[in-house]
Image (cartoon, rainbow, N blue to C red; front, side):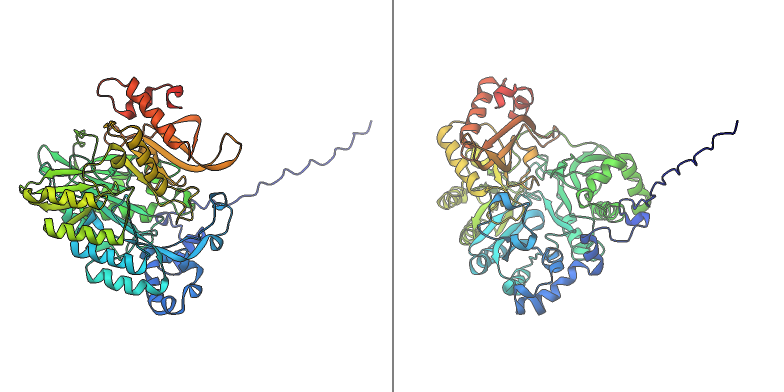
Length: 565
């Protein structure tokens, strides 16, 4: 019997082999740009756009600006287009950038260490009044932000700022952003070490230098020798935290890889002690790792925190020592737990020279140019001409003689800038929100101010430390995940079935050595109109259920979902 012919075997489908492109790390040889942002940075360094702004765009107007400059390189000089008025939050993620762009800019003034003279503050106020329709918000990174800036006016604004030692250089963009520092550096009685000279040296060597002007994304730095841990070091890319080494004396504990946004991470200690004189070199090593090994393929993973999470602290320290410093770092101790929850320096405090500093609270960082010039006048009349901004959107006047303290406090009160704020005024922060920000979904500044008023009226005797942070979108510019009550803006449905502005609620976040992210209660969303009722309700439950000395964050971690709803 003849054998049955066999059908030829079907060819096994060949798998398409694609070459893995890696994470776009330069140190791995991946220099080919893998997205539009990397391409425009390769085409021309962001710092070079200043010449075009001064010689072309400021003379020919908004329509002459190249799109890659407009939405890319101009950030290297502190400029973002602001949101066109009248666009509701439901269209934020739908419209194209050119549909969201207004023909005006936000301009960020870089204030390293939060340090200002009254002359500088007065110039900031004058620019606000002349060129920015009076706007001048204090940010939670110690900067000042203008709105309504015309491209035609930018060169003159730069001239005026730089004449008094200020700038907008690398205030935004994929660059080393402002170096935040203790606002009472060099004057506080309890200071471990003054990091001001390191901030100055980093700025002198590296800010505006092309050595670090093309990073995978932004890079945030904090340096403070205050035992209050007053610069939110846990959520910066690199932080130097004041500590006493048992053998070497005062110096800094080194942290890396912190950050918030949609993938929040608390920074990690490398277990290394850094003396003051070596801080700039170590800083350059850490940012060098980010430049060379940072992930450039996806913008969503292009922050140092992702590299640190993948490598771990031990490998990161090894690479830093072997490839960037060429020496071993000294092992060192961790910072001690702060003795108080408030870290904002609000109120009247004695300096180590016997004079006083006075910290005061604007409403959610919102001031105006006229007010800033009046603050400069008050500070000049009552102090030595030194003013500070803080990372809680607050301000401080330094060097006040004891017999002038009360007069200064009264002068500030007349400007609605209280040095004796309620817990709500003191603890509420808000990002820019939908008024100007193209990423925002809801309003924040006015909402935060109204919330303060309502809570002060309803709960006048509430005196516990409490932080209430409002953010207009998920990007956490106002640090919602580490607030007692963090409010993330989104559109929600009210009891009438209508889509309205509201917030997802995070409860019990904290900074300090017990740092952690807030708890989200399933399905808990609050409309903007319901916000005062909700916050009042949850705070009264806290008061009723708390144990002796228990902080809100600790209570929120153990409270029932019913109590938090």
